[in-house]
Length: 139
Image (cartoon, rainbow, N blue to C red; front, side, top):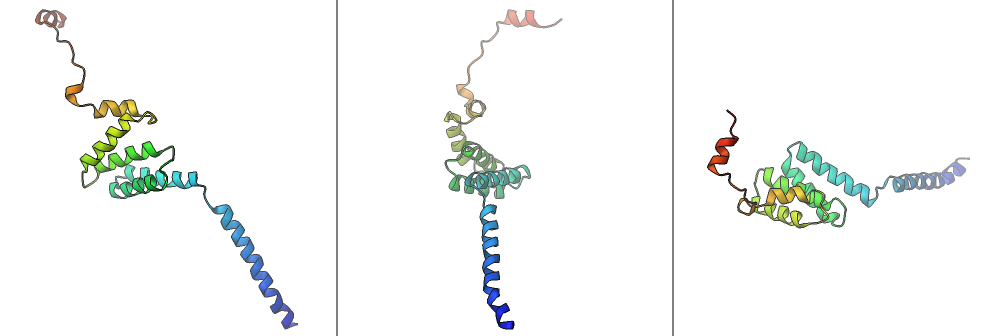
């Protein structure tokens, strides 16, 4: 009798292995889910003012998921970490911001254009004449 119970052990291990393999396969994340988790961890770190960690996660996202729909937002997040982080990498942040302002697929590109416009290139306002300014003051 003991010999027959030992013969069933390999079958039992094979069954357990098959169950575990099936559960691991269903637990794997899609590329999009992995990208979303990484992007969200970078944003969370930035919101918690952990700029160095956030910078690393934004860079990892951009390296691994360069074709993802959230790439412009990740580049923007990276630029913010470069500005707000301890090393203050303004030149690199500026380069990222300028490229984002030119990108048509970035949802916030209108805001970016306003932020990256140089003061001297802003439209000039017409000055009021001295008589107009005196008359427009409340008495």
